[in-house]
Amino acid sequence: MTFSPTLESLLYPYGADQGDTKNPKSDDGTSPEITTAVPFSFYGKAYRSLYVNNNGVVSFGVNVSQYTPDPFPLDGGSPFVAPYWADVDNRMGGDVWWRQTQDPAVLSRCTTDINKYFPEIPFTAIWAFIATWDHVAYFRSTSKKVNTFQAVLTTNGDIAFLLLLNYADIQWTTGQASGGDPKTGLGGTPAQAGFDSGDKKNYYNIPSSRTPDVLNIGGTTNVGMPGRWVFKVDEFVAPVTTESIDCLL
Image 1 (cartoon, rainbow, N blue to C red):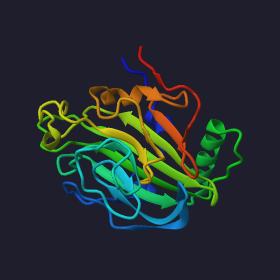
Image 2 (tube, one colour):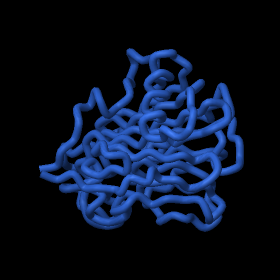
Image 3 (cartoon, helix red, strand yellow):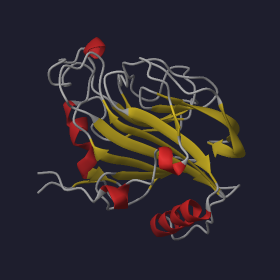
């Protein structure tokens, strides 16, 4: 049995009551280009806009419609964060939500989390972006399996963090077009998780990416909290030094 914390402690608040925008119901769809209120520095480049792509990717510069994931580093790819890159189909079930915010309560939570995970770095958040894939199904699903996961980006105007990749409930790994079984959502080319700066130098593949074991990503961590991965992404690849663990009972 995989241990995971309560959704309230793992996920940042999301949804219509938080003022989130919802992506259209569209296979391989995306948000419109989202202009950010402050620049987000991602390995030496400051970005002022991004996209939330239905297939489990937050991208900078261009949207991403590709549904079968490639391993990082990508060959000439655009920079993006992949909490769970796979063939999501929100027409079959679930929603993709996003918002940027400077709400004091959210910024306080970002600040607290960053100071806990990186105590040696003075940090006070001034902006956050929250993207949540809520109970999303996979392409050609004939099951009731759904995934819920989240990415949170934050900055203090100088230091940028891919703050959190949160995995609340992962039940499938692969859509049918990626070789998966429509009855199980397994097999084929499973989901990729991590990030890629686009420069072929700064990237990170979360262990088990593109393997069947990515189904258990909710029981792994690099910060001692099952289902959560945290990275600093403004200058260099720096997963927290705590050894990644599987929390299985």
